[in-house]
Image 1 (cartoon, rainbow, N blue to C red):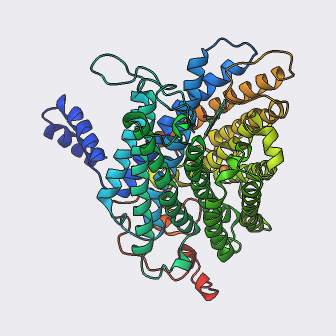
Image 2: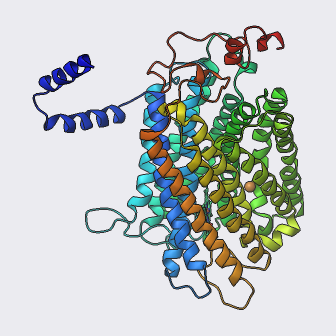
Length: 565
Ligand code: HEM
Ligand SMILES: [Cu+2]
């Protein structure tokens, strides 16, 4: 007691500039983060950046849902509505989905393969900052005024930016240019990070970590990152062609001059469809780590899981034109894309089966990470079923461009991907901060999210089936759509409340959470063997592994996994 009092006073005695010190400290901290090349800090910056955009994109969704809650809504004008769905879609895909998954990848991949950092730490920092610039540019478009070089308004061409909407005649001013440049920059960042993750996984594994002993999360990040090269390249090409059309009068997408609007659709969806898998594979990655630990069993069918993931990667490249069934590609092309789309359900089905087999007969603990994973399993199954329905071309002719499609893809984006992102937060938070997130708030978050999600996206199928088109800013009463739209809008607000509880939990637990220790979930992979939060160099000594569950071997020397592998 006396000791600590003495040391306290001596600290105060040294501190001769009490007013300036905190300010300097803040700048130091800021400088430290801005110049960092540590994969953990970069990962956290990605995550923080996407959380900000999750709230922004959420606000845009709520604005749309307030407008659509009742017929003849007057909350926003048609112009503002168009801007809202463009910003919402673009933000959620490029500035929430991709960066949050890259954030987790950045943080976790080196730790889980026993490496000290990514293969190219400086490229890593560059990729983050260039992506961040992309997000900032999109919103900079709002800013107007002489000398500010903003567009004075937001882009309103949809996140798909179909030709000829984006031609100079239909889209004068600079908001579409801001959209294009924003996508270009964030694409460059994504390619840099993808290259880094692939190289890290190939070259930086610790001794004994053979490819077939890697955690499934690393496998899935290997597949997703490889897909990023193949998917982002045509997107980048298309953006450059669009800029050429707009600025030097080339006619790639100008039908009046012999160009083709369908060409844009091919370029866009050759990117756009794999993009969905780029987002969903990391969600699978989280499920692969969380479900076994909370079932107390090794994951069922590791080789089949790897094969299915690689298979999904390949097949997903050949299905893009299922977004174009109604364009008139001809029967031959339609048949090809119907079948390639349906085949994807085989590896996906294998995964669902293996997760269920992992849970089957396990000692299940329903802590928050597992709750969100179970929600994911259930919702992803339903999303898959409506996906197979839409893959049937004549069915798609009826419903493409309707709210049924919006309901389907939000089942994937929110019901599967966002749910697993939440699961990952609860699971790895103690590793990152050294403290647990509140389980009580976690349960509130989960149940409100489930209720809100199903109110919104289950009932959204119905006006879709009744013919309600998407991207309309209002509708006439008397078509049987009113009640469903009202329920959908209330559900969206419930989801917003749930998300605020989550954000509160993140902040509150950082200061007040229960101290976690190194391995609070009694898990098996390497990241749990180091301190929480991990030191700058990750591991005091380079780990050596002998099986897929290195921590299990240490905890159970009498019956280690490598006896069976
Ligand atoms: C509370 C959650 C959400 C709600 C209530 C919501 C609501 C909406 C609404 C009303 C639209 C416009 C549909 C239309 O008129 O065509 C839309 C479009 C879209 N949303 Fe969401 N959304 C949510 C979350 C998300 C998330 C998490 C993502 C992606 C990760 C996402 C991605 C998209 C995309 C790509 C579009 C298409 C935009 C377009 O047609 O240009 N949404 N959403
Ligand atoms: Cu698709």
